[in-house]
Every structure is written in structure tokens, then in C-alpha cells.
Amino acid sequence: MLGSWVETPKLSRSLVHELTVECFRSEFRTYSAIPLLFALPQFAERCRRGPLMVILTGMCENFRAESSAGKFHQNEVSSVMKIALLGAGKTGSEVLRLTRNLSDVSVTAFDIENPPKASKLDGYDAAISFLPGEPFLETIPELLETDLPVITGSTGFTWPGGRETFSEKLRQRGLIWVHANNFSIGMNIMHEIIRLIGRADSLYDEWSYSIHEVHHTKKKDAPSGTALAWKQWLDKPVEITSERTGDVIGEHSLTLSTPFENITVTHSARDRQIFASGALWTARQVLADRNEMEPGLYDVQQIALSKLWNSGPVTSERMNRTS
Image 1 (tube, rainbow, N blue to C red):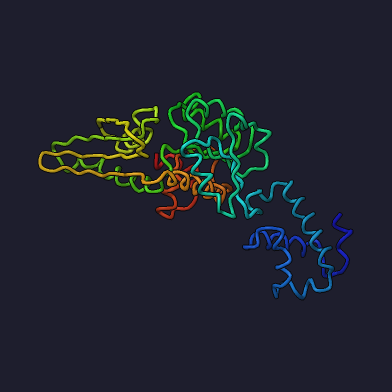
Image 2: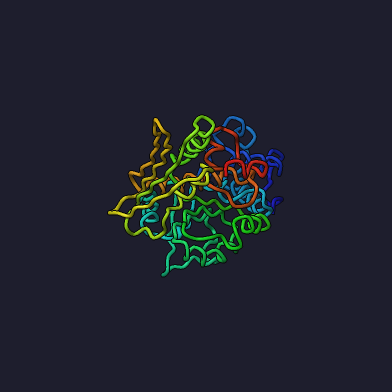
């Protein structure tokens, strides 16, 4: 096929390959922008004798061949991130609302009437799930049949076989999944604050910790997944209390009590879009770094803290450092 369109000495296979790679590494991420390459000085002289459409045809054929060989991932050549959204309830609907006017994100919602079968998920870049715990567990076998990164904020469930066993299954299949009890970007700052407060026993002779969480009346699990995550981050004995009232999006407070002073830190969610935007942010990070990330199950903190401390993509050597 290549020989049929290499019509002049200046249009060699290596030149077409160079043009293709340059195109997909540059800001011109779609085929519609390919003609702009021929306005670049470094290519103009080399390509001026070649028929434009012939060159474009060759570049497309060359890219398809390399894509089939696994040299390019779909997200690397598409300016639109295609998201399969599992669950369009309170938070899932915010993903739809947030992306309605975004030109670089395309979202398709899957639900009971449009179940996320593996065959239907072909062609998407990532899946974002805000399904409740049980429906999410029922969907896991279908998701395992795809090669999609899965970003899930589902709570109120236990990973099949336990977290480590499930992460190993993902590693064997070469899959990257990210779980978060709370996709708020600010929650990752709270992670660092709570870790610091958890060291207060080195300063005080008498101390105690308490966590109080408040959510809307429709939230079924208590304590919340975020409160349980805070307990894990604190790594100290702590009393957790829960409250369900009105339409509260989510409020969590940690108090360190000592004989002469109290320290309280609070995180309040003001809009459900913080969870939607956090899930989309996570999907972008995973798709950008997936070639350098080890397969497995991640906490969103591992992704966010690698950015917060500018430590680069999470690798197998650092997978457990932030958990």
C-alpha cells in the first residue's frame, strides 16, 4: 500500500512516518488539523512536490498500521475524551451537566435501560462510575472484559476477593482502575493535613480524636466512605459519628481534643460538581500517564499526591506509599 503513494524521491516512507509521529506528538491532535503541518517551514520544502491528498492518505494508512501494532493509544490521537458514564443519579447527572458545554469531552450515560455491556463500551477512552455499591459489583465482570481505565466513586461495597486480590487480577489483565470514596480535589489536601494531625500523640500526653460526618437523607451507607478513609489516614483510635439530614452534599470534621485545646479541621462540599470535576480530572491524568503507570487498583490520592508533590506518574515502587 505504501508504495502506491510514494511518488517522488522526497516522499519516502521514513518521511511519512516522521510526519505522522510529529503530528500526533504536537498540539495538532486530530486528522482535521493534519493539513496545517504542511504550512510548517520544516515540512514545506520537503513536501511541496507531493500531492496533498496523496500524502494525507498515506499518513492515515501509516497511522492505522502503527495503531494496530499498539504504538498509539486511542486517547493520544483524539482531541475528544470519550467517557462511558455508569450511573446518572445525583453525582452522575453532575458529570453530564458539567460536560454539556465542553467541546473536548463526550459522555454517554449507561443505566438499567442501557446496561454497560462490554460490547457497548468498545471505542470509549475511560469509564466513570457513580453506581451504588451493589450495581457496581454486578457491572465489574463486564468492565473486566474491556481494556478501559475505570474511575469509580462507588461506595458501600467490598472488592471481590479483597482489595489486594482484585488489584492483582487487574495487574494480570494489564488494567488500571482508580477508586475514590470522595473525588473532591481538596480532599487530597485533607489527606496530608490528617496525616500530620495523626502525629499529635508525639506532642501531647493526653489526646483523643473524633470524626463527625453529615450527608443527605438518601445516602444509605454510614459511616461514609470518606469518614472511613479519614480513619485510615489518621491511623489512630477514633470515634466516628454520622448524621443524615436534608440535602447536605457532604461535610466531614476531624477534632483533636486535648486537656487545654481542641483542633478541628472541616471539609464541606458546596456543590456536587466537585465530585464530577474530580472524576474527570482523574480520568485525564490516567489517560495522560497510563503508559508509565503500572496496572492495578489505585486510590485517587495516589494520583493526586503525585501531582501535588510533582513526583511524576505513580509507579509500582510508590503504589502503596500514600495509602
